[in-house]
Amino acid sequence: MKAAKGKGAVRKDKKEALKPVEDRRVGKRKAATKADNSSKRQTKKEKLANKDPNKPKRPPSAFFVFLEEFRKTYKLEHPNVKAVSAVGKAGGEKWKSLSTAEKAPYEAKAAKRKSEYEKVMAAYNKKQESMADDDEEESDRSKSEVNDEDDVESGDEEEDDDDDEDDD
Image 1 (cartoon, rainbow, N blue to C red):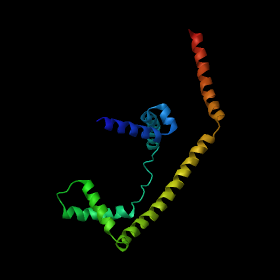
Image 2: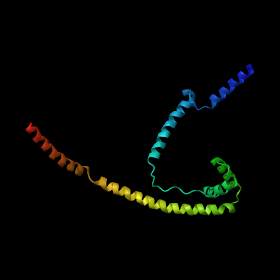
Image 3: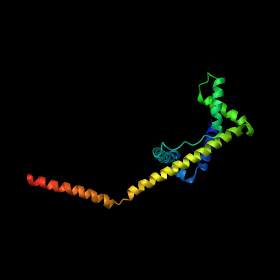
Image 4: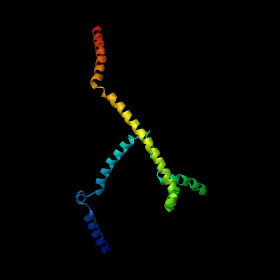
């Protein structure tokens, strides 16, 4: 038993030697990584908040085009299998076993969908740019013009307020 403890101590020294110098000073490695992960999570949430529901979806790859057809045949052959993972695994194995000639029609369909997506995306981007231009035109109106209108309206109200005070 004592020999085992001695080996464990040697292994611990090796782990210390592999750690970067900064980590040896801090002592706990996990605490430093958790702080970094929390900042990443916030940025992901911000990205999700900015997602546009009108943006076109990306087209499926050749594998997913193949999987659409494979699911139908797999469910006919295996009606009792309900797990999505089982269908995915079987589809992945089948895809790997296909030759390049057998994959060609799926790759052609994927390329066609990709070209359609690029056209739709170009139209979407133009629409976004035009909407951004409209927003800029509204914001181009100087703040002083907006404030002048507010002053005119509030000035009338102030005069009315003064008259009310005299009546008391």
